[in-house]
Image 1: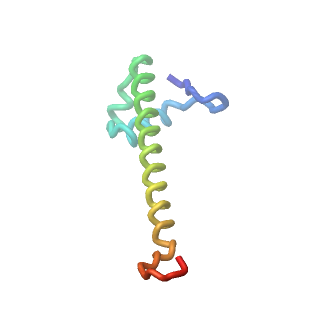
Image 2 (image 1 turned 90 degrees about the horizontal axis):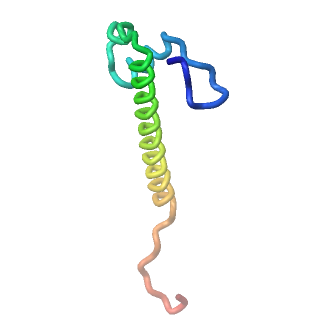
Image 3 (image 1 turned 135 degrees about the vertical axis):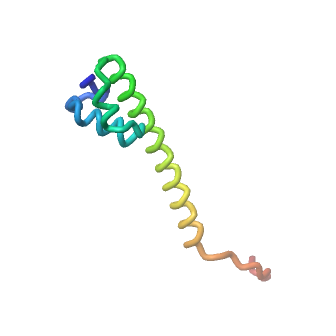
Length: 86
């Protein structure tokens, strides 16, 4: 494997690949260690990258929603009183 799509990043070590597979895809470490086929490791690391991207999108969307709610709470409520000056 040891290839990343991002230009300028150093390739992952086998240990880093195992860590990513374990933490993102929930594959036990001892199973990660048994994955010898380069094609299989590449596939799984790519899937882990996809999951990470999806999780980041979800976190951003959630943060944007929280920010919007905070902005709405900070705005003073509009008065329902009708005056001749409006």
